Length: 284
Image 1 (cartoon, one colour):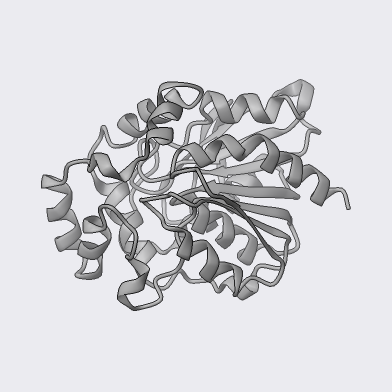
Image 2 (image 1 turned 90 degrees about the vertical axis):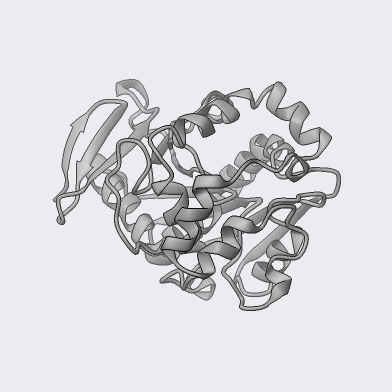
């Protein structure tokens, strides 16, 4: 049994001794509220930032989020897979006494939302992946449409190569569209600040994320039995729409919402309606 400490921000200790940090918007008054698990992008801290918290609270939902290994507050786990990080999330939920939940993630959080559903099919009511990255399918088309695939390409060469890339990498402005920048200056301004905080203690989390994305995830998409919604921006230059299309063909109960004008960040404005879909799906 994991050791639970803290309140809205706390930690569990895994059997290998690692600390895993979590965030929980639930309080004594809403302990019976439906739970959605949020899986953060790369890099982020895992904190439940304001637009996520607000959209969930408006619908009576409790949000639990977990910092993946190597991010602030969570000890690194060398060679971790997507499934390994998802197992940490399930351990946190066990410690919190959460049985049934929906699982949502954005960008690099998408794989982890899917992995949670694959690992705990009897506990997951619905899955949402917004601008989520697909498993590496082994040819150049996986990178097609990415404005800056350098980090992921380096990850294919191993940890040393990806870590070296992180030391010199700079953000490629063309990765974001005008709508992305407008979104970051508006309702989702907290996302940019949280990304900076996620990388503040070094590149370990980001490096290990990229390695996990381009190696076997430890779960198969076909193992996801819950209804699954893929929300994808048609103008996404970070994770192109081909990734959502590839996953749609391999999910048992997949549905795709293609938002043609949105980019990688602006597609997050669909979160409120995606949560409405979660509520409607979970009560069927």
